[in-house]
Image 1 (cartoon, rainbow, N blue to C red):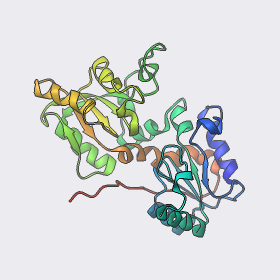
Image 2: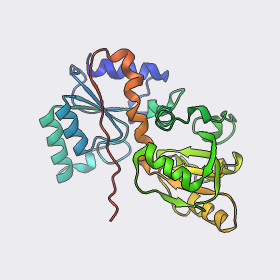
Image 3: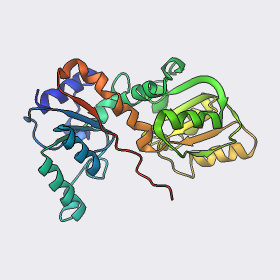
Image 4: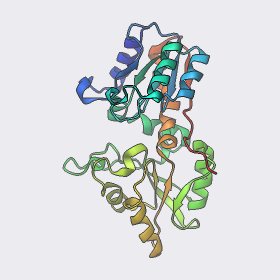
Length: 281
């Protein structure tokens, strides 16, 4: 199968009509559509290390969820003459990998692929609360981002210990009382916890769903974190756990191969972890 045949099959399976190129970041970032695919590496982001790992595995197609070229739409005009861009571009050309971004169609699918992977990684699918639909309301009330769960009761500390194991982290940033009881959990992976253009959305979600804790990807410290800190300082049972963008979305890419297997045949599929970007000193 060629790169185009693989990507067309993926878009078809999402059930989302192909989005016009001007309206989507799901584009071929490097390589040729006509390349015969010998192996596929799936990752949150095609970092330099991911590209090297993919090439060493014999994968000549990388499917990345997030940008290769450092901005939301992967524009490269502003990078003319930039030494980081030129060296990375040289590496891509030397390895011969094609890089395709699978972001918008993945999120807009009837079952959001990032949440699907998160559910599989944590085992939480059985705890998913029925989605609230309100066509006239904010995006999360239309159902797309209403990822809420009622898990067996634990403490905030206990939930952190569980997430460290399932998500693969050693340190978590938390606001709230570590000993507070937790059962109703909202998950806003990636940029969802920034509000998706409606900065009050995470607070609305917490109130409407009576959530004890929200698992966050990105944060703005003076929105949801400030709301939760004030609530906690007044003795309310509210908390957030910050996973970060990469750790909150990487499970979706880890489990993507299982979703693709029906049309990839004998092509080897490799999950290539982009890994948490931060060191803690």
